[in-house]
Amino acid sequence: MNRQRIQIGVISFLVWSLVVTTFVKAQSPGKAGSPTDSISKYKAMLATHNPIGVSAHRGNSQLAPENTLATYLEALRMQVDFIEIDVRTTQDGQLVILHDGTLNRTTTGTGPINTQTLSALKTLSAGKGFDGRFQTEQIPTLEEVCQLVSRWNASHPTQTNLYVDCKAVAPQPLIELLQTHGLLKNAVFYGSDDALLALKQVAPTARLMPSLKKAEDMAEKINKLNPYAFDLNWQVVNEALVQQIHQRGIKAFSDLLGPFDSAEQYQKAARFHLDVIQTDYVIKVYRTLSEKEQ
Image (cartoon, rainbow, N blue to C red):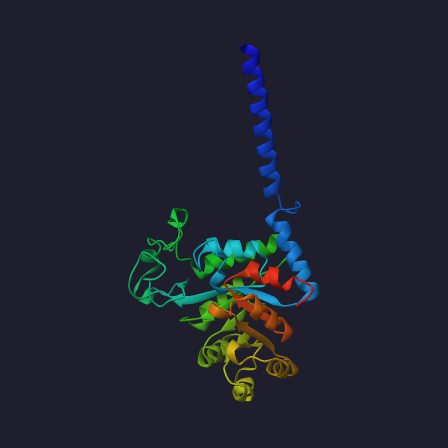
């Protein structure tokens, strides 16, 4: 009886050791077969075969709620080039991240966000629609996002920049926060032409990215804003338009979202030599465009 117990104990210990060893190896960065290793391989192949940047739309990782610190962390682990954030202003003048003008869709609150103080917003969950793991996820402040990205960039060779959608924000506090955390230089700013023009007065070297829905509007927008990039309406994008933009020393970004967030459209964007794709499916882009033949 004792011998049988000893044998069972030894077998249990060996099985437990094997499970623990396998788990540790799988979680170790840089180990063959780990998620980190796979993403690094995708990125290396992407740089070789299709050198195109990737922006995580609202930080969307498919693993956590949009525009939260949890999903931004996942996007950073995916080594994206940009994380898109939607910046709004609270009743008490604090800068926070939320796409919609109201709280209803993504939080446990209701009503317009600009009628709420930051302290009131911090009592809400931003994990609506996800499982219980994200119940404690809050609407992040811009400063919290800047701290997260800045810390990540300081300790990783792959740098991720901010794609700032200026939903409802004054330029001065926005610029000051990004500058404080060393994120201003490489950030891009999207918004209405008027919002970008106001931002340019505060930060003349900021990388502005107005929308471009029609090619005939290009000259006027260049004269007015001297943009770093154009955000192109994907439905009107073609290779000739992208080439025309590049000839003026301007970069071309486009949202491939909804029905356009597909392998076929990623391949088309690569053929057009687009500079940055914005997507809700980062890994899908990596897998599609890391292939040699398109």
